[in-house]
Image 1 (cartoon, rainbow, N blue to C red):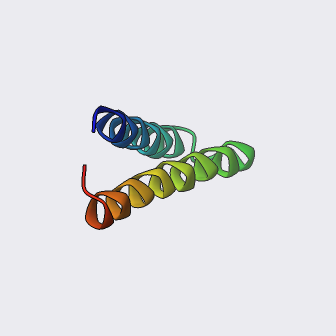
Image 2 (cartoon, one colour):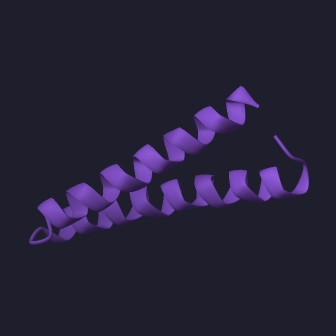
Length: 58
């Protein structure tokens, strides 16, 4: 249960940081690629843990 909550918080932090820095450095093409990957990783973590919660529970 605690691992799931920590995972959700970590995924959310990665997602928010990726969005923040993507907006901050939107003029740099290389930065956009890197921060887009962070956004995808954060979203995948969140989706995977939400599915785990739905299927298995906390």
